[in-house]
Image (tube, rainbow, N blue to C red; front, side):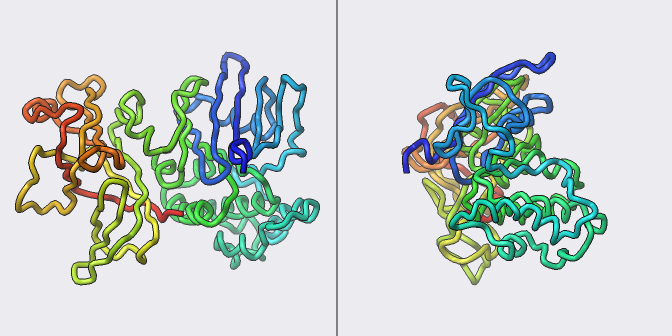
Length: 372
């Protein structure tokens, strides 16, 4: 596959009232790319431009297929773009049953007749909505309506699925119910998803790539774990700063009910039996749960103590007491990056500066999602 066939390349610029947008980024044709930033930063405008619902100057190619190119005077209308769009509100047809809402989306698949098309039964099973097929939308919960909306979008056989804060209208309980289904989409489907959110917890559970936005501009774009550990970006300076890693289960200690997961540069141990050997799990390590030592600690209750090398030390915004330490796992520091937030006094007392080899003690590792 050529590079352009494996990539979504987007660039849009223009003014909408008092708001100015000027963005450019690339995303892979697989997995979840999150557009993340504060309200009013341009996330939804970008999504609408990708769908052709909003026209600003620029260029958009999806898997080598050009949907917009102002230089070539090319612009595909919304109905000519192979896009599934999921809005904040499910917007189901109230006079149709769940089954008929889904079949409405499937009409496009009948026209395209593509090999490898998503099957009705598979999508119903993946989203857990088989028992809802004969119900009217008014009889569904908010989370159920959104699952049906996602199914309808997928059954249109899109090349690209756009999701505009699909959980924003749900309460926390409903979000927790629907997120596992979104994780299943990420795991099972090869359709690329561009996901808009201002909730970092959603992004950490779902996203592979992140486009960080502010004021209509791209601050950075790249793998989620890289941007979380970048001292030049605001994610590291948030009160709940963390890094998200993907680990592979290598062993289960049945006697003590512990799971070993391999990540680049080391192995982490989690309480509980977390799955079969060889399967992948997504992990979240909070900066507040990481401490450092110059020598390997003895007789400690902390099971995760890994050699690492300090890559950077930066002050916490407006805080003279704390610093953020980014370290790469492994003695050479070439493994996964983790972040620790420690006192400036400790940092100076131990002379923790870039290049120093240390031991990272990780008090708690949170399992947040299954991986691909």
